[in-house]
Amino acid sequence: MTKRHQSQPRRPRPKFDGALASMPQVKVNGHTLAPYEDFYHWILTQTWLAFFGWVTVAYGATNALFACAYVAVPGSVANASGFVESFFFSVETFATIGYGVMAPQSRYAHMLVSLEALVSILATATITGITFARLARPTARVIFSSKAVMSNRNGVPHLQFRMANWRRNRIAEAQLNVMVLVVETTREGETLRRPVPLRLLRDKNPMFMLTWTAMHAIESDSPFFGPDAFETLGAMKAELFLTLTGIDETFGQTIHTRYRYHLDEIVHNARFADILRTSEDGVRTIDFDKFHDLEKVEGTAQ
Image (cartoon, rainbow, N blue to C red):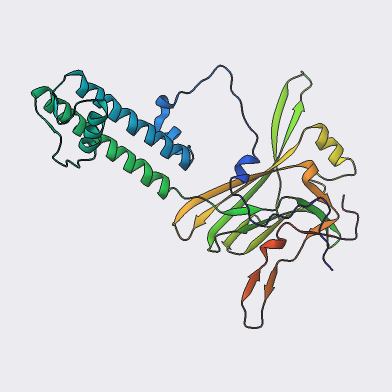
């Protein structure tokens, strides 16, 4: 009977920003990057809620600015006697609606309308382009097991990670890279952060469609080899970083995602619960409710 590991929570539905949340946060001193210095990158990295929020603020501020310009010269707009009417006239002009109730009636107003029409063309083109770029940007929907496991395979200890493609389509030429980032101090007292790549039994999957359990054999060349390996890696503040890249068959573009494991997220003498079943007619079924479940196994994986 399958038993869930005591420290393993049930996660009915993954949050795909968890991969980003698992990455270390970086703070920078002595270097500030204002949004206007790299506006395109800055706006693409905003959430959809923040993006539409900034668009709404910019839209309201622009129309308010033109409304103030119309109010500055009384009588510029017919049937608009105050700021509110001038604001709505600006909205109608900006959106090229033009109901005909309010209209410019001076050369000054016509010049402002011409300027606002130009701003409207540029703003519409910019917002449309950025929205399309955000929608067309490929994203990965790959989930990672919340824990890594270590158990014997054919008498050899293996470190294992499990992944699954949540979209249920195919990721062609999937490539997985795993490294251990350690902190070392040289004889001269210099602190270095050195990445140590982990050799996987299979680091490529030509058709990643269902699940993928990547394994690293803990042999003499592995940083996890030896009875004191975990204590040594712990003293070196080691962390595991996984990077997955591939071509999404739906988008036809390269996607990538990443994840991080701490040493205390590696469960010894455990394996992943089986979540794949094949019926007699050949239909495969994946039980994502058990994706993070672990089973205890006999053995002394080191």
